[in-house]
Image (cartoon, helix red, strand yellow):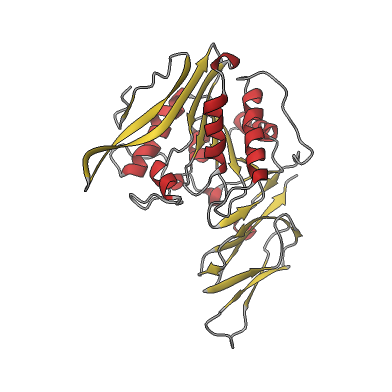
Amino acid sequence: MGTDIGWTDIDFDRPGKQTGFFNLPNSVHDDAWGVVPIPLTVIANGSGPTIILQGGNHGDEYEGPIVLGELIRDLDPATISGRLIIVPAINLPAVEAASRVSPVDGLNMNRTFPGDRLGSLTRQITAFVHDTLFAMADAFVDLHSGGSSLAIVPAAIVEPSENAELARKNREAVMAFGAPMNVVISNYGDPRTSTASAVRAGLVTVGTEMAGAGTVTPEAVRVCRRGVRNLLVHFGVTEGQIERPQTASGELHAIAGTHSYVIAPSHGVFEPYHELGATVRAGEPAGRVHALADPASPPRELAFGADGIVFGRRHFGRVRPGNCCLVVASPTE
C-alpha cells in the first residue's frame, strides 16, 4: 500500500494478523537509497471498530512500546471483533536513540501534528499518522510516560474537546482504562499534539502518562497492560470484564492552567519538598533552586500556584530558567 509518503506491504483490509513495516525513504550520507522501517501491525477479524494503538511517540518512554509488543505477539485474531492498528515504535529514530526528540531532525514528534508529507522525517511520520491512519480509525490510544526529565503518577489522560458528545466518550474511555489517576491535560493549549489532532479528527481519544524518569517500573507496566486490555473491552473489540483494581481512581483531575506548573527561575539544582502524590496548596513552598557554584548565594524559593496533587516532578536535578520542576493536578467538580 502506498501512502504518497512511503509504503507498506500490509493490507489494512485483510483479516488476520499482519506484522511488517511502514517504510519511509531516507537518503543519508551512508545510505543513499535507504528507508526508515517503522514497525506496523494490523490485527483484524469480523466487524467492529478500528482502534489505533500507538507507542514510542517519544523515544524515552518505554511502557507503551513494551505492552504493545506483548499485544502483537499474544493476541489471537479470532478473539477480536474489529481492527487494531498497532504502531509500538512510531518515532523509530527517537526510540532507537532513547530520546524525546528525533536524532534525525531534532524535532519533538508530539509538537509536529498534522505533519508535512514534504517535510523532514519526523513531519513525514506525523503526516502518515494524521492523514492515513486517523482516516481509518474510530479511536486513538497514545501511550506516553514521563520520559527522561519527569517522574509522573501513572495516569490516563483526557484530551479536551469542544464537542460535548466526544468529550463524554473520551472521559468514559479514560475511566475504563483504570489508572491510579485521571487527568485532563491540554499541554498549554498546544494544538500540535497527537491527541489534540485525533480529537479534531473526531476520534475517541485516550492518552497516558506512565511513570517515567527514563526507566521502567513493574507497577507502571502493570497499569499500562491492564489499561490497554480494559480499553479493548470498553470499545467492544474483545469480550470480557473491565478490571478495576483498588488503586484505580474514579475521580477526574486537571492541569488547570499555567499556574499549575512550577518553573525554574534560575540556573542551579532543584530540591523538591514533596513526593509524588502529595496534597499541596497554592502558596505553599514547593522547593528551591541551589546555585552550587555560588554557595554564598541563598537558594531561590519556589511556591505552588494551585491546590491539588503533585502529579509530575522533574527527574534531572540540574535546571535552567524555564525548566518545569513540578506539575500540580487539581480536582475537578
